[in-house]
Length: 210
Image (cartoon, rainbow, N blue to C red; front, side, top):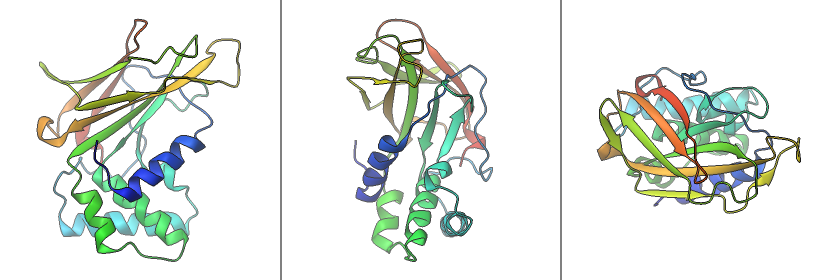
């Protein structure tokens, strides 16, 4: 999975900072955004608007990690996830730079715009430290099933705040999907399949995600 160096650093930081996770239910909604659809080739005005959003968020002291395209329940100990879209990536990057009273360079912006895959991360729960090993993630758009180009998962899950009571462990499953394989305006079912069985699903409307 090729990702710009800035987003790779911020992704690692975000992974380290997540303290609370959420259980995922079918039919969940995406947390509020701009109402744009996912854009593979954003216009200059869209790029400028995304960067301005980041500066405004920094001025309002909104944590940059809240600016990703999050979905799922906001209840404690219930999984959630997010999509690292190009527009969200620009907004998050702009916010980080603005917090340091800096402006992203053209090279930083280009790294995000040249990304050829959509990254999706989901936090799930299990009953043992290795429950997420060999988990898989798929997207379904109508009758079409889209497989990821890469999947990774936590080999050793973290304990939750209620350990040893259920849900005792939490882990991330992260997948990358080629933009070329996706209908970026379609209603989409996102499904995570833990290796131990079962399915965790989200119903998303890509037309409502920036």
